[in-house]
Amino acid sequence: MESISFTVNGKPVSLNTDGERMLLWVLRTDLGLTGAKFGCGLGLCGACTVLVDKKAVRSCATPMKAVAGKEVVTIEGLARNGRLHSLQEAFANHDGLQCGFCTPGMIMSAYGLLLDNPQPTREEIVAQMDGNLCRCGAHTRILQAIEEAAKTMKGAKR
Image (cartoon, rainbow, N blue to C red):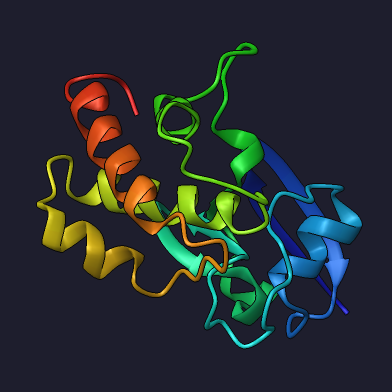
């Protein structure tokens, strides 16, 4: 056990935990942030995606020691003052979800892309989202939602 301090959705957190424990389980079990989902457990499906220092990572494959001193943002951290983030609104507007299981990971992967590249091409969006799996087949609507969000977020505070 070791003391690991980091920030989650703007709030400082300090936990005594095993440094090899995966971030996903700390978020879900210890912090009650259940938006990141357990899918494959191997970092391949993207259901567990969160941002660590503004980069999309698979929380099921990210040990706690890797987030020490860093900023973690989960899907729960995107909405502000009861208002959905424009990316979340775009997913809703384009029906970019069906069952909703993959949606938090999709949104967080897209958010990481838009932070890094505010005006991505369709090809860049496809490349970023290629590692996020959706069994419902909403991929086309997801791409449309990300394109809309890129336009909406242009110049806005992210």
